[in-house]
Length: 380
Image 1 (cartoon, helix red, strand yellow):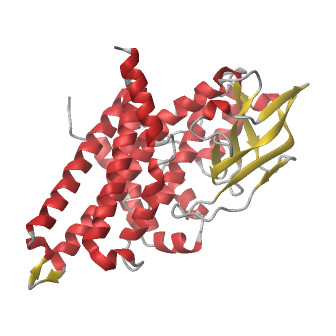
Image 2 (image 1 turned 120 degrees about the vertical axis):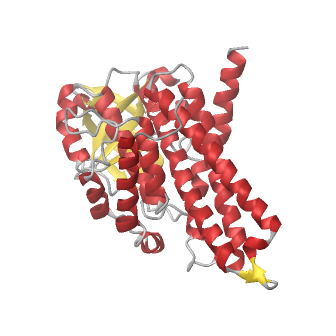
Image 3 (image 1 turned 60 degrees about the horizontal axis):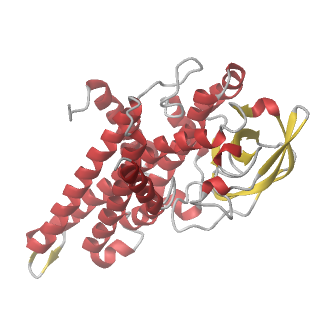
């Protein structure tokens, strides 16, 4: 048990911190305010290997561990959680192709994904199936060497601006075993998109419905065998939960640092806020809970890397705890800023808005509790 980062991990951390300071932090407020999807910046991130983080090097992936990636996403999110979270989603799509695709699929899609010339979206949620993902209704009917897809997906990050959509759809009967994963390329006839959603946060990435109307996709675009799609989707979410938890760590850490600096500079009743014990205790609790969350995230990442039997359970625990703590820390930081925390000249309000959705996506925190409870009761 070693709680220190390796020399390589510290190097990744420094590289990510430098990239975030130079390319994300100066623009994050503008991207948020104007809803700009910073594709050129994403491609600069790809030049550093950030687009295929835990993919094999066969097609040009970076080959890092999940722990390496968690360290990296914390640093990126300390500047801009919204853009960092899209990089996580893109990595999940690339990893699914790398892990479950055949040689031809990998050669066809991964090189352009690793350069971010092609951007990816993960399509599981539907208007009628959120937490109950296995009840999805999007259908893929076999027609010779094609599938004909009909249905819609909701709240899809990147929809309309990205190029590859991994669509979980029903090729068989009800339940998870009837679901397959099919890659739909942009500009495929029958693929369209809903309106761009107006969101509380995550404004540097577009979100919209993905609509499939008699959309013909080659059978060769299916990942794995029919009926394996839900299993692939859940495996993708284990890693996605670590990443989004790490994004909460980064955003919360930035807010903690801003609150500390504000307490040292702001004076009330003739002395700095930092001299008030009640506020000192708030800051101490924020730091303690954030550190506990980081330890849980790192343990889950190592477990996933090593195929530990508790990995899925620990990923759910870490996601629930870190995203709850992340939002709480950001919200407390806003409180410590008083009225200034509520205005856009101070970045803490943007972090509060961005971190709130982490408690909902990649499985709501209520679903994370269900996963943990089922695991506990099954083992009783």
